[in-house]
Amino acid sequence: MKNLKTLERPMLILLVGVLLSHLGTYMVIPILPIMLNETIGLTFSTVGMVLAAYAIAFQFGSLSGGFLADRIGRRTVIALGALIGAVGFIGLGIFSIYIPILVTTVIAGFGNGLNAPSTKAAIAALASKGKETTAFSFRGIAANIGTAIAGLIVFFLVSGSPTTIFWIAGIIYIGIALKSWFLLPKNCGDAPCPAIPPGAYKEVFRNKPFVVFGLISILIWALYAQLAIALPLRATVVLSEPSNVALIWTIKSVTVILFQTWVTTKIISRLHPLVALSAGLILIGAGLGTLLWANSFLFLIISGTIFVCGEMLILPTIDSTISQLSKAGLIGLFFGLANVLSGLGEAIGNFVGGRLLEIGKEVEYLPWLVYGISGVVISLIILALIKWKPLQESLSQAAQQQDRPEKAPHVNPGPSNHLSHPFNSWEQETLFRKRRRST
Image (cartoon, rainbow, N blue to C red):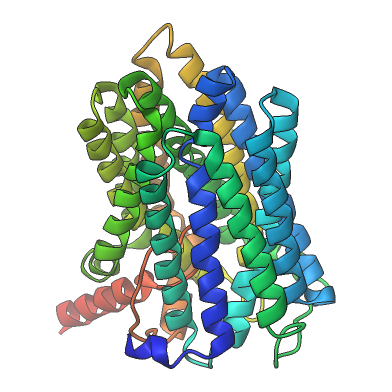
């Protein structure tokens, strides 16, 4: 709390926006598949296509947002993105036909995509030098608080009228647009808006370790995306009131808030990052696979908890590994491209997941078996990368060049924030052991 009091007013406004955006989004995400399937009557495959369209639109919005923010200012892009997102969410509350639903989902995804990178860039620009980790850690806390509150609202207030939440989410996003436009500084604040130097993209694609890791991350995000479609649709089979599944997202966020710091300091920091990723994927696959036996709300929570244990290993490790592989001065570009790959993985995951769940109506065990096996297979692929020298050398060199980051509250922020560098601790411990053996 002491660190929170030291944050300047524009930073606090941004953090409030992060909380509100996650509040609005996660009022919709947990029950959107349920609404599409039960209320509108779409098949599981079509639900997967709608969610895939959201993920793709989000990435186009992210690319457009990064481009526009340097030209018309972050405040404008944040406000514009929130307003477009509001239109999309309200449209979901109005329409009950597939094509209009698909269009409004794309609008919501594009608007959220515009909003997200500009908000993160503004946080990075406004953070005092040496305080970036603290600022992004508070962003993670704000995001998870918003997600937790969203689940409670859906569970206690609007579970009987699913379409109401889309209107509420739209109103929240209108509030974000107004707050951002009137309260945030113009352009990029005191710092000049950065420009990507010529040839920067070539520099990224020459970085073979980053390219290979990025391609593997598509598989990770494809599996990670399954919870958003598999858990709600499983709830339609198991629960008499499927929209209550939103409470699981609250439990998920509270778990992250309470335990992410411990997981990072006690587990991730002591492991090679690829080992941490591998272990996380096993848990994610197990969380998804055990949904086969989830025949009550309690068992849905248990599966979700297993999943979130893997999530707490994976998300900060992916971000820290990307930061280790990034070139100095181009970290924003590297993370932007990494976000595109994560969106591609989520889109593929949603599409394939919808098809799998559709087949699962005939062969019940098949989707859950595929999820579990996929977790193991991707885990083994990642473990094999430990023996690939270019990747190992890049990580080792980066770890030796960077100082240990400042201590800060570390909360799992989601796919696009780089808050910790667990490889540093692992590398230092490994070097210490080698020196001790040599003496």
